[in-house]
Length: 87
Image (cartoon, rainbow, N blue to C red; front, top):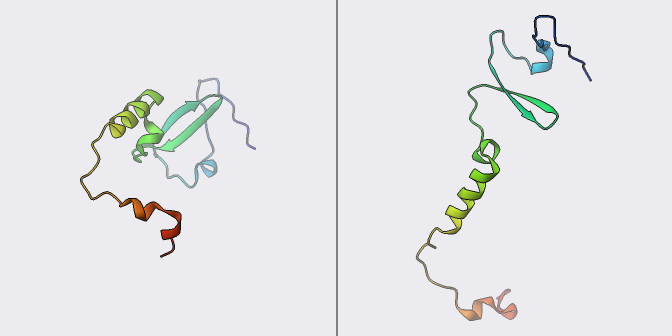
């Protein structure tokens, strides 16, 4: 595992070979997750569940749960009987 050091100028330099072949002048987003620093190519859209805070995810779930069910026919009770599963 590589060890990185902050220089006298306060810069943390990461060797290019550790960045998956990133081209010079590439931009990265930095995220601190607990004790881990995550570098992600900038401009790449992350899914909602990755970028949202726990509160935002909870709000989105609550909104989804309160969405009215789509109109449609109910299953007849007979179709839910074990004996009819394999018919």
